[in-house]
Amino acid sequence: MAGYTVLMLCRDLLKARIVREEILAQVPGAAIHAIYCDLASFASVRGCAQSVRGAVDRISVLINNAGIVSTGHRMSVDGFELTFATNHLGPFLLTSLLTDRMTINGRIINVASRAHYRGKLDLEQLTDSHARYSASAAYSQSKLANVMYTFALARRLAGARVTVNCLHPGVVATNLLPRWLRTVKPLISQVIDPEQAARTCMYLAMAGEVAGTSGCYFDERHAVQPASRLATDVELQEVLWNSSVQWTGV
Image (tube, rainbow, N blue to C red; front, side, top):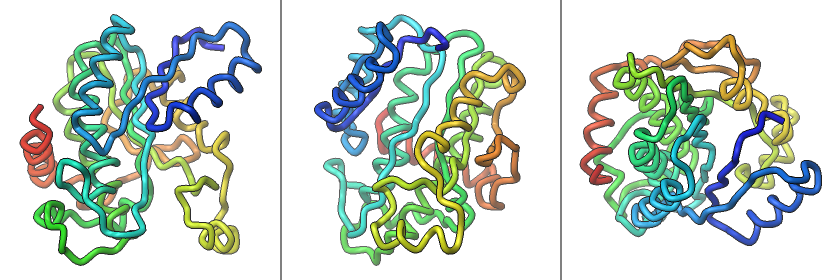
């Protein structure tokens, strides 16, 4: 084991405790703790950040991994489309509140998706509860935001000796995929289990060869890949950044 103290930020603490016990059964004595966090709620994210800051003085690795696909058009408690609020705005706020605790040579990792290639950014519709909705489009937009945010944050942390990267973990057999899609997906692309999907995250978190790498998009094979044209549009990145700052009140 790498010897890290692990803080799991989870919406369901009961499930988190079950996972913690499973880990402890495999690694007795592991320092692993669960803290409540609902990324769809700014108040919850702020409370979580406060708890994290009270628990640790420094953070070596921050992995923004949680995500959802809302099958219907729902709004967060703060008035934003739920998938975008959970997948981008929540992690944006959390990272902003914890960045000053990152150690020298610390690493921030955002789990994105190759779905970002299909994404388009329509910020005006995010606060419209009556806007036309597509679950696939909403997810792709949120993943596009993850990649754009990674690049924008990497620019801001240049020289701070904290790296920021994002990745596509692969097509993962979790409950994030609808049941029907989990059934047919193996017929059109390779589906991997969560343990396999975590490998690129762990590579970016621990591998020495990427210690100085920042502002990159990696695939599930640990290789740097070109992001979409929209994702690399610096002007659009800044529009997203400024809107995110305004909405979250950072």
